[in-house]
Length: 632
View 1 (cartoon, rainbow, N blue to C red):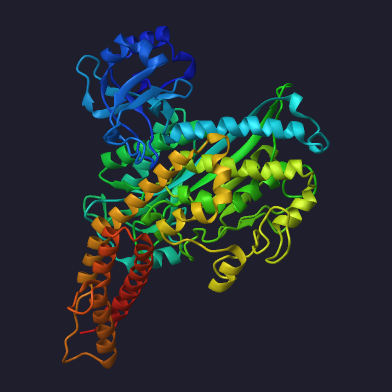
View 2: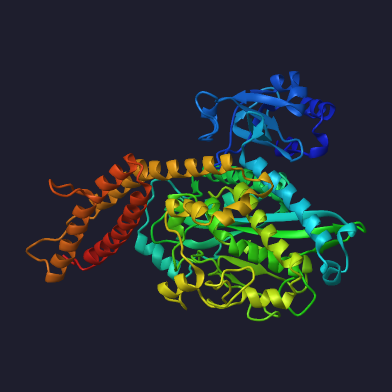
């Protein structure tokens, strides 16, 4: 049955004749869905009968195919109640996938019912307003501007051996590494057990067993059928050994996994990521497990990242491909590569809001969990030994035997990062640094010295007060004070991140070059992010934390309690009351933050959120100490 299914319709077949022929041969494809992505990363989903699609195929291929209202997408400040119509237009230049429902079998063919997923763009008042189109604009602007910059550079030919006239096209490549947790529903595992397993690295790259193994293998096979070219699937650092039941099956499954697949073009790579998540969800669900892409699903245990790899190549008229980041000299990067890396580092304050845009994401970015906490890079201790520093924001990936492998790995994204907007802002920032490096006629040694500067050293492009490169362990080899002094202020709430657009308005201007991000789109993104931030705090986080507080209850017997037990409980009780119990003369922190939300006093909300987070962490640790000391 599987061998009879069609999984992909390639770009060359996105025409009336080919599509009618293909769909006629594959009668199990019953629906079409236009898949657009709004500014917070939500993908649209609708079931259009295949007959409607075929009857109006010219409109689907050449015009606005579907009209919807603003309630279908999240575009605050754009799709308002008095002007809510949003148009959807098919993207005929990317791959189209068929999504199968294996629980709904078509009677005529005996095959699962399929939905043709067509990646699409959103238009409001004739202007594109979706994440996919922003990335498309960023890619086009990057390619055109790079070609202009190469033409203007007096030193490019000298360094690369060719010039703009020799280049047929600039290629941007991208790939993601997706981490996620899987578990059997309603099975709880002790946090101490999880923490111990993590410290001992018992699960990292260990063999998968039972249903986890089967689901992982099926996922990789399914990705292959869609042409995604999976490269690896393995256990990550988080998780514990499952329990063996009498019938040989496993219960208590709680494991962290990672799946990697081959790079693609920027927009196709982001589209592929959405498909991979759906495959993972469905395959593991079929085997009785829930897969979560939350950045930090378990407090105190490793979160899930989605490292983003970016590279830039030039395809020459001769057919040869050249990695523009790579160099043959005794240095780490080419002039182009140094400029691109420095652009990301300098402008990261305005990239970060698109990378870390949720409460959940900030839970992951804590020291000690291999998630980056500072804006800093690592190049390697010397050019012969590529960096493997897992504590930096962005690393340089090199392979002396494969010059095409040179690329950057941004380690801050998580599985819920909007990859379209993340990539778009990375490209805009890279371009800013590339223009500096090429037009100011900098040498590789000049740029290496600048990126390796110490705080206080003057620089032509990077900020004088900051340090941007370290080969040390960022978590262990610097104090909190040193990290902030060397690498700058690190936001810890969504609001602090959004404020960066105003604080660093010069860097925000980098994002708006070429109208890749307009003021209207930026304002909509900020509004959506802040609204989502406070809504989650009030209606999800506070209720969840209240359950945490209720679970930290009194369990000692006063007759047998030691003075330490009583001391612990008194402090626990004090924190509980401070967080959640109101008095006539003093409101609890929970009440204060709710009031600040209703007053739209976001500065106060941000400060209270940090205070609450700190006290909850102290409460959890105290309660563990308290429980562990009770032996009666």
